[in-house]
Length: 130
Image 1 (cartoon, rainbow, N blue to C red):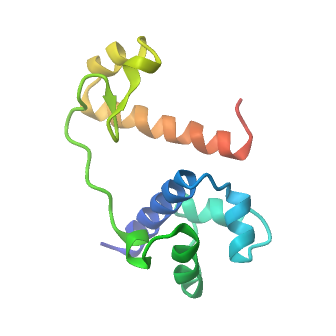
Image 2 (image 1 turned 90 degrees about the vertical axis):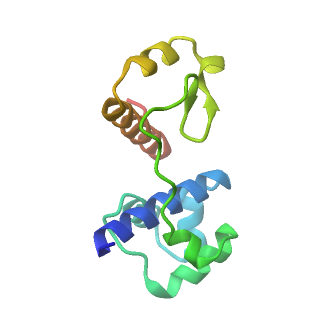
């Protein structure tokens, strides 16, 4: 694993763990001593490294070990189960229009859809829902 891959994995984990704990980028930035949330955003998208002296503090705030911040999540299987989306969330209960479309997409296009959904979440976190 190279440095760029490590930054991306760390960023994805940081964002996932932060969101699971209901923290905003602003709250995490403040807890780590950053002036604003843009520093956290840059780390989450893999553009910037977190200072090494803050890795342990970040892990403490999120309630995980420092190692967990760098561990890659298991890969998604080639195809997603019917009615499921990463993590087994039942999307058919949420919207019966999504599942039939998802089932028709190739595995590659399923990944593209997930990437776009994650992009939309990031925009939503920023307050830009255009």
